Image 1 (cartoon, rainbow, N blue to C red):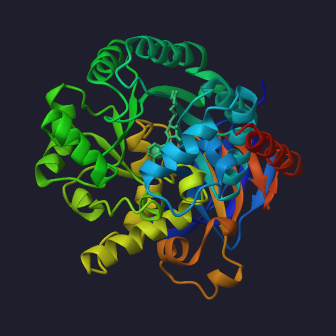
Image 2: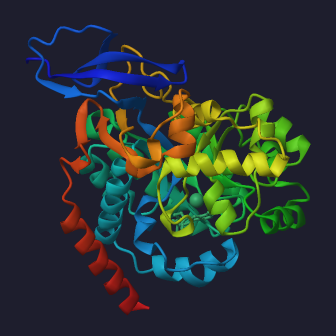
Length: 434
Ligand SMILES: N[C@@H](CCSC[C@H]1O[C@@H](n2cnc3c(=O)[nH]cnc32)[C@H](O)[C@@H]1O)C(=O)O
Ligand SMILES: [Zn+2]
């Protein structure tokens, strides 16, 4: 079969290997980056994108979300995690269906594509329907089924069965764009038995693990009361931790726990907007980075954020660390670019494939338009333009796995109006059931 080629001409290329943003052209052959140079032969390419005045970056990587929760955007604001989950979200989720989750995931996919995210790591239910949405949307994803057993043995067996079924059915799906992880929800909803069983299965099948840890002070106190240990001490004591674990939040950490994270090479997903909105606290991210711990960025679900704009999330992350440490030099724009791209890829164990602009890597690429009012006149530091000045709506073109998902701000595959209308209908129906 003939190769499919796309030439992106004259872009300022910015990634964590190259913060100077040299003006170059890039050739995509099928699903991969095949050439980067100042001169690429235009003959015989299938498509040319003129990227003059645009910044080319790796697609952003959202390391922690619940994509279908876009349906619950604005449903329950100004609450603590505990009340938000117990009083509003869990009762609403009790009436979700696979079809509803699919629509929510498509709505989320539109938001990801429009704001320049090409890969996301999700934990939710009805994940086969989410996988279907990922396939349809053309995105890349790590999907985990959120397992909660509250120490009930029957529920535990069922939850594990669900996650394994997802693995059997969807791992490697969508031309290899989907990978399946385990998703034990948290140390306060998943029993010790469940966590130990997941560690065993993760080792046996080489499957990663995605979990919420140390999100609120309440969680720390509850685990201390129950186990006599702080969450990471407890997880370490049962042999649960490893380099294949993505721990979302990590807000409340003792120095001892930072050592435990480091020793086990646990990957951290930082979700500053959700942590701020639910008043959970401020994660010690600059301290983790100082300790050479791998930290990626995440939005959490759209119901606790309330959007999926990773550029906005990275800006928030940077500003929050500066104000928390009273040091403007922490979490610089360059570090934030790395956090949104190559570090996210490392968090997901995908850094051989994505996260930077290199020959042989997957063509997951975005273009950001600098000819817009918030980007003019623009700094000579491209990271500063992206992190401090831009937001997701400056993203102009989104390509995943060599396929154009949005060009000149127009979606190429998904139908926005149709999906918005369906999402409005779904939330209307869900509200009628409670
Ligand atoms: N199988 C589980 C489903 C769990 S999915 C993952 C869960 O995480 C919830 N969630 C979303 N954001 C957060 C957060 O920040 N902390 C803890 N849980 C969250 C989300 O609403 C969903 O219920 C069940 O039967 O309930
Ligand atoms: Zn979450």
